[in-house]
Length: 472
Image 1: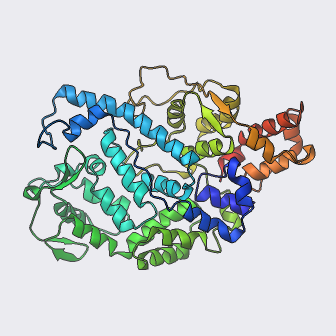
Image 2: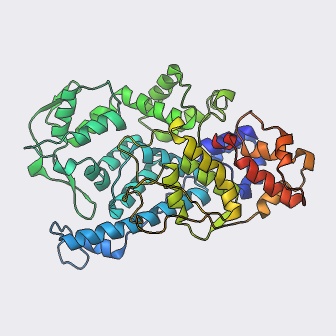
Image 3: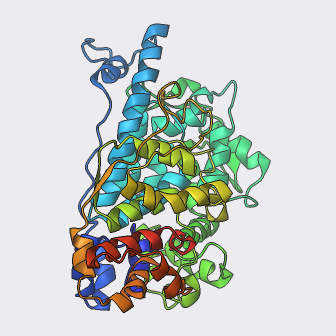
């Protein structure tokens, strides 16, 4: 049971109560192939952008004018306000997909790439385009993913590359491509960045989000980057970066921290993973195979060793306790309170993760959430005064109520045959990934005894409201 839960938590968002029995009926050697097979289907394109935004940005109704560069202030304001509303809906739609989809592996790795290629842009059209690039290539080839992200309007705008012109080079894009997306610090010089920035001149986008290469803004002279010289453009720089084994090892390290352990990181494993990733031609699924099929993936030291991110924590609860939310928008405030809002990373480096997910305030809120769900309680917490992150809701009622209708039937069915004396331990085995156990006597003291169903519900909620449940 522990190994199966470990796989479901690390390569997905934890066990789903409705399908738990089916997973348990499978032999161990079928678990990982099933995770992969369930994610083979290509993802649906999430088209949330309002028609008004599309009309302004895509030139609908304007003959021969797919690129408008003369938006007035009223049109720009309309785009900003509508984009905020649409981004809220995109956020909620992706949360729903993470919760319900069988393609757990695809969405979990997409969440990894969402943090790796962090982009904060309030334009809904560009964000949904970038999300699709990430979800579509999450398990494919890193070369395709890197190139697709680098040419997305969301990333070019976020890193100011539309301002990168031969007369006035802007180094932001080139720097972050090297430092955060490929090799990492220490493997390039400041001159490499300056030269690479010249190669990326002319990379821009149309208002509809399509990539465009503006040759008149491109520096066509020779550049020298990482020891190579030539009249390089942006595609050439990406190829040069991918030729470096350090790039493969950098990605392998981040993936190891995300899937295995973010504190114990043996260098020989990173080198082995990175080199095999490189030799595969950057096949992401090959990297995942090497991690999951290793003899150390299921090692005791790696189980229950990671603090769940807020998104992992919340989606995990929704998969354990099937529920319908009467006010789905409360999930937006929940993300703000726990400091991980989809599409709003703190900076280009993404969310730091690990112990940064937990402080005294966020831990206390996490411990309250399970009880708030069953009590339909107010999510009465203070959030940061950031109108971008509040998605235009700054002046609206921020209290939020977790009005969830929980379907307890699958949960009650799962533990129906467990005796009262064994119930707490069995539920703990299902919910927790740590070896530490709360004394059963303590649980029993605070557990409802009216009837079997009440006992199961009470134990479930109390065990989810523990520090142990924050780990996976």
